[in-house]
Amino acid sequence: MRILITGVCGFAGSSVAETLLNRREGLSITGIDNLVRPGSEGNRQRLRSLGIEFVHGDIRAASDMEGLPAADWVIDAAANPCVLAGLQGAGSSRQLFEHNLASAVNVLEYCKRHNAGLVLLSSSRVYSIPALRALPLKAGGDAFQLDGSAALPPGVSCEGIGPGFSTSAPISLYGSTKLASELVAQEYEEAFGFPVWIDRCGVLAGAGQFGTAEQGIFSYWVNAHLRKRPLRYIGFDGAGKQVRDALHPRDLAALIDAQMRSTRSRGRSIYTAGGGVENALSLARLTAWCDARFGSHEVAADPRERPYDVPWVAMDNSAAGSDFGWRPESPIESILDEIARHAEQHPNWLESVGL
Image 1 (cartoon, rainbow, N blue to C red):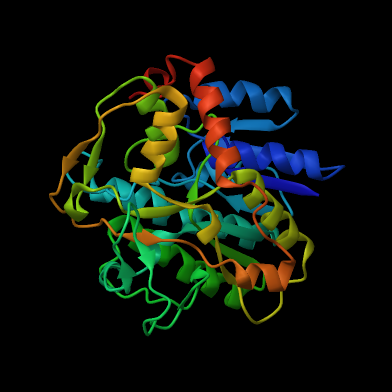
Image 2 (cartoon, rainbow, N blue to C red):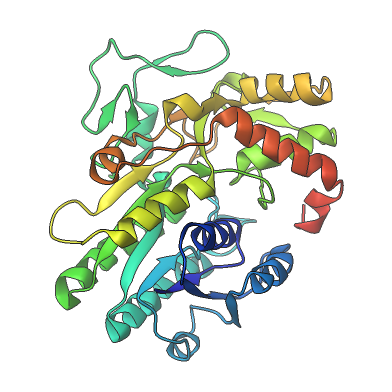
């Protein structure tokens, strides 16, 4: 099987590529990346040592896509993944839409040309911010919890948020590019007949991630805590109760592998994939874990609200479980330990990725 991975030198793309090589024999992988992200150059060398063919190119340019060899499947892992992208100080809105939406059309045209299947890595940030903020939550202790005794809106259960949850605006500029990419991909599938799977991912986390405070929060928090950098609990009374779930990309790769082995027919194509409620953690509890590992470090309280912040997100993996027999295998404790060991072994990691 021949696979093309876009954004192959990013954390998600490189981790998925390596995991798939370990899972399958006779796999040929080509990856394309523009290498604009600090730290991505190091992944290029690692991937080449694994036998992955690397192409230095930009999928925003149709001509760069036209020169790529034919593949059976494309895994689209290229994106500007920051929820604040397009706002002041986080790149322009035009750049965001070029990176995340215009480039997706070029990927789809490639799939059309070669009749290649597509696995589109999307995001939990396609969900409605007002609807997420309106979820019934218990605010006691050091973490928000979903109140299962209350009436829950469609698309939410005690297992988390599923594909049927509201995607009504506002969802952020970033979220809108991912949701639009999903819709266009489904239209291409209907019009041209190649298979499309869409995975709305929770927070990806693991060793070697280029984590920042806006994305890759688990990696960023562990690295910053170890080096005693300033940290803040932003919004929600500055208490650090906001919760996200963590998914290791090797577990995501297992789902992608199962999808590529399956026959795509009409029916469900969109899945939520995350660590789930078992792998969900608040910032306050993440700090407590870091305190126990590295020693105490004070976190400042900043109660000011930001427009795109949400209090609680955990993915419901039941659809992927029922259709593909998939569930995440990496517990949050092992993910954090992996990140911590990498942080201890790479004292200049934050500087090397431009932080």
